[in-house]
Image (cartoon, rainbow, N blue to C red; front, side, top):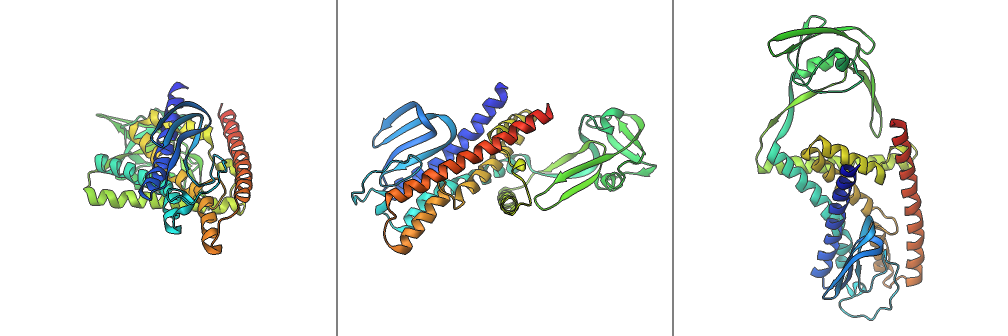
Length: 356
């Protein structure tokens, strides 16, 4: 429990800090005064004012904000504009978009840097030999005594040379009895195993195949800087594309909110990946950073995308939207966002009880 909570705080804390740091840096570069740099919402735990900026940590850690002079934002404060050059509303449209999108760009950059660091230090994993890298409980392999490091020699007297040959035999044979021979050290062992159906849900389809509950042992090939950069960008783009596809299916009812992880789900996964190793934990952090970046760029009130929409409308009509209108939009957005958090958290709780 303590490990899970600590892992969750690290994941969310790092991602929020990086996101808000992006806004902060962009505001400073464009000459906008930053009044508050806050990690968390509601009541302050600690607070320190340095120059024009008050740096705070608040007790609700599910977000943060950078309060800029002359801007209606998550703080829901309405202060009259003076036209001072350090006010957000005094800046040009491109400068506003730069400030508003900087947090998302930093989240994407964090994801790319995490994946780059992992690939450059560990390498690119390739599955080659039919060597067991993991064994799942309650599957045929575990019940038969297969262990990590065992090498599959044959299935139904067919010699196995690669992992692909192994899966090619097992996946279509759910419910059949297979005679499996494996090597452990200098000893040969055998057993009769029955694969069972396993389903993997994707945004647009569900894969069903036979499984005995083993995973491959990956061989990692060291690569240089350019290959590491290329692969990290590919992974980032894959996560972005998959997230947009999932969002599209949620909007059109092809997927349910039960498939979306909320704070409790993220906390559980944070703990699980940390237990699996620092590489898995960092990979999860990178994935969540990209996901939160995508959520923030959506054209929805409260998040950065909503700010960009309002700034774009103001650029088109060439006058500011009344502060009262902005405040009302933001209040509605907050209500919808809280409702969304309650829904996904409820689904998280249901998943926990189903597994227990």
